[in-house]
Image (cartoon, rainbow, N blue to C red):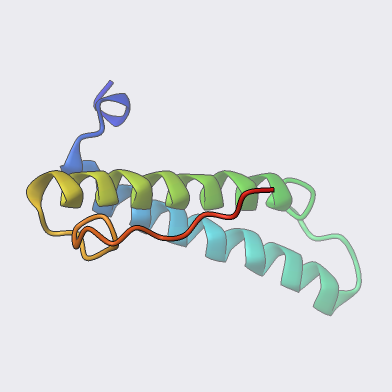
Length: 88
C-alpha cells in the first residue's frame, strides 16, 4: 500500500532494489553468452530486466514529483522555460 501512495522514503529502496536486479539479470545473460550454454535463470532474466527497469523508471519519476513539490527540481518547469513543441 505504501508503494502505491508515492511515499518518498521508499524511493531509495526501490532504486537500490532495481539496480541489484538489473545487475542480476545482466549477469545471467552474460554468463549464458560467455559459457555458450543455458545457465539457470537465463530464461527469466529478460523478464527480470524489464521489471527492474520499469521499477527504476517509476522510482525516479516519483522522486522527481516529490522534488517538484518541494521546489527542489532543476528543470525547465522550475525556471519557467517553455520548450518549443513540434506540430505535425
